[in-house]
Amino acid sequence: MAKYLLLKHYRGAPAPENDVPMDRWTPNEVDAHMQYMSDFATKLQGTGEFVDGQALAPEGLWVRYDGEGRPPVTDGPFAETKDLIAGWMIIDVDSQERAVELAGELSAAPGAGGRPIHEWLEVRPFLGLPPDYPA
Amino acid sequence: MIDPVELRALVPRVLVVLVGRGVDFASAEDAVQEALIRALASWGEGPPADPTGWLVTVAWRAHLDRVRSDAARRDREDRVDAEPPPGVVPGTDDTLQLYFLCAHPDLTPSSAVALTLRAVGGLTTRQIADAYLVPEATMAQRISRAKRTVAAAGLDRPGDVATVMRVLYLVFNEGYTGDVDLAAEAIRLTRQLSALLDEPEVRGLLALMLLHHARRASRSGPDGRIVPLAEQDRTRWDTDLVAEGVAILQAALAQDRLGEFQAQAAIAALHADAQRVEDTDWVQIVEWYDELLRCTDTPVVRLNRAVAVGEADGPRAGLAALADVPDDVPRREAVAAHLHERDGDLEQAARLYASAARNAPNQLERDHQIRQAARVNEQLRRQDR
Image 1 (tube, each protein chain N blue to C red):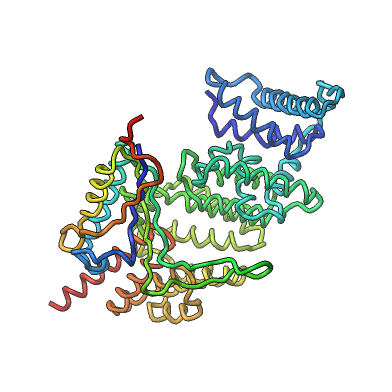
Image 2 (cartoon, rainbow over the protein chains, first blue to last red):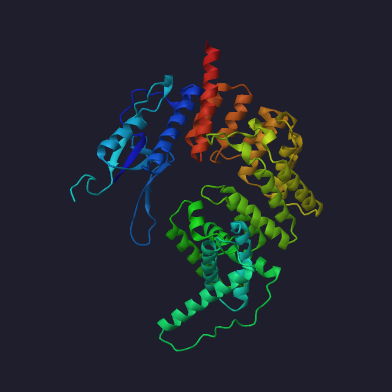
């Protein structure tokens, strides 16, 4: 098994095909989307591939050490142009193909008009040998 | 098999016995935890005839084993007397002291919560860790640091009842995530505290918890989504809990020493009293919010008061009341959105709901506010047609 981090971005990802802000969808479309996301997580828990999922607030700042006895330097809130992560899901799967397949499925979540959003998700393998590496 | 809640109810007494025998609080607490874990593992066939005595004996032995191995490590030949010193009969005051100790003013709120749940509530470290979604090792460290803090601070300055109540209210609001129902646990501990202490605010807190708990089944939909008070199925409210909460509140109010928890419970009782949402006595609720403001003038109280004013005197009055609430108070935009919607300003409402969703404090509220924004935007599109 190998772990993968699926990252969803508020900003910084290429624009999705079906790019309508969620508050402009119909209430039924919103419900359908949330049902899809919930079903997806439930399914992964059922297959034993779900590890963790969390959402992040759309704010934050950069921080760095500024020398002995001085408070850390902060920069932020993040500028509008900066990449901003919205949340993650960690999955534990048998192959990279499976990770890609699942990310594709997540990206197919329905949006405006009931059509898939085609949202771009970032897939990042955890450090470690690939699962199919010969013993 | 003993009911785990009944088992946990024995924990403070066992702990008090050990402390009464001269064992320091931190070691006694470790020993009781060990006895508790053994009880959970070995009482499958049924509890012993005297469960408290069993726990005291096992905890005492666990303590002696530890002292012996410590002594051996120090390469000493001192023999530890295996006979317990004359037992001090624990009284209710000792259990009360335990509450105060676990909510010591030197502890951070998260440490006080963890220590209270373990030493007074009798939960295992793993259960507490699960409930707060942190690794067990992290929770174990938090608890042992809390015990060191309490030991270093000494017992001369224990917490006060106000801190204890804040800790219990924090636990209550956590709800339940793991296999332990923290809200029910907070109610149990507050009930126990209320029996130890004749204090109207403790009764007020207990009443508040019961009245909120009574609505739990109706607060969320089948998929976990938030169901606002106005839309809840009131036939699903637990009338026994409501009746108990109201009776406890009335007894507290009769003592004529009003405090914030009694005022909040009074507001909850007025909601519980309304068979239909349109029966709600908003005028009286606003009066109780005014009382609450006199007890504790916080932005959150002002925010909630603005909602009540909006219902009692109309949305314009609600918006005027909202002017006293700073912009950065969580959920302010959601309240403003609701008031603008009732005032007929749908564009402003939709914009504020969307913004409330972006700034929501958790996923469930975010989903709720997005649904509100989508609903109002759809209404706007219909109007344009």
